[in-house]
Length: 153
Image (cartoon, rainbow, N blue to C red; front, side, top):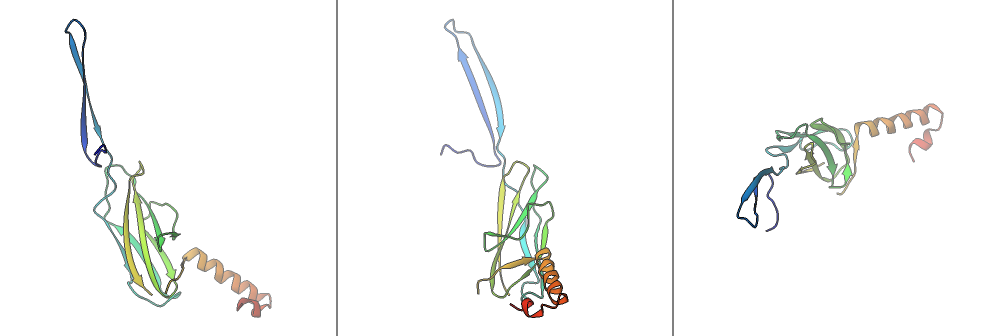
């Protein structure tokens, strides 16, 4: 009620009649945008060793009339695994536990679809490849500087 459904065409007709009985009308059609559809979210592999297994979270098969599509991936609904991108996947390392991974797929006008996937590798964080590389660089630099005991704290 009082809401236009997504992906539908609505026709509005305006008519007027003056005091002499002359009339006219105007008609306009409005198409309402719908969110992307037809795709899903997959994670490969679906299990693996924490912090050593590289996981690929992929949102494939999505389509929409309003391109390009943008993708954003999350862990546990709030922790971003990627920025908004046109890439349909992100590669990540996960810590041990259950992860509720998800993707938000949006068209150029901002209509969004949400796709969830749960995997087990309890509650934990996710590290993207760039974050992991930065941590490794910090550890190597600390050890090289002769402060190996700091790299373990």
